[in-house]
Length: 397
Ligand code: PMP
Image (cartoon, rainbow, N blue to C red):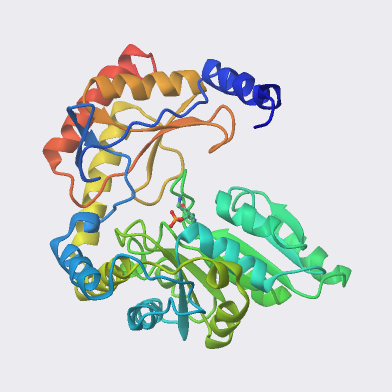
């Protein structure tokens, strides 16, 4: 064992994080991650899950998972390229491609993995990546794995992107240039200006890459942000996750057949990480089928989101630029944000504080995630708690 002094930086920095309200406490759930959860023997209205459509506990997904688990076991036993590719994985990839309207799709153990995999398999030394400054952490890390020049552009600032794309192209320094954006920005809920991004990409011959973790199942009739804007066929790579609206776990890249073949040959998480377990794959297949059959759950999600957002705005809260069900309640100061969340907790509402480094300093917020499963009674309870706590903390009048 190393001498304890080598780890003293951890003790010091943890104490500092705690003192500044930047340390996330983790409380385990004693129930499924539904609209009402149990923690510490108490029930809470849950406004913090990404289980947008309630599919995590849908009987049809559970049945599919159980049946596949009985037939294939709990684990897939190997990485995809050795013998961890089951017929189920192929079926899922075909369904995802059809769902997204692309030639092919490649499934990975997580959405985070997809960004590690796809960015670094395609971009390398001598290339450049134009990346929105608010892109998800997994995109930032995926970019770091390349030896490409990473050029950040101001959040959704299309003039900045256009200028930087032109400069990068005209410099003649880069073999390939990629533009990467979240489809829906996960902490603010705003939608990327994809029509302009695609236009700029077509002008300067950029590879387009959209991480649609929060758009899939939510926008474009479920197919996501690209479909929402009518841009199918004009975006090279779309990332999706199976862990949010789909309700399971895993991620995928929807792309051309050539790119999919390349990712299967070269992307490191595909080659070196055990494939998704059979139960998760079968449940995801069932979810994609459901999403294609009916839009009822999506409609319910959007109705609930409007109900909550209208209620919070009426109370006087600032929700920032959200245009999706993601409902941030901006507080600002980190400590006050943590206190807000703790006071909501006392009122029986679980709504997690999101603070630096997940969001920029001074922009702490309570991030509410309404789902299709919330009832108006649950949302009314949440609004009543918001009113009480917001007044007590002097955030609303
Ligand atoms: N991209 C974005 C934009 C996300 O919000 C997330 C989830 N936090 C991910 C990727 C990672 O997805 P997963 O949870 O499936 O790893």
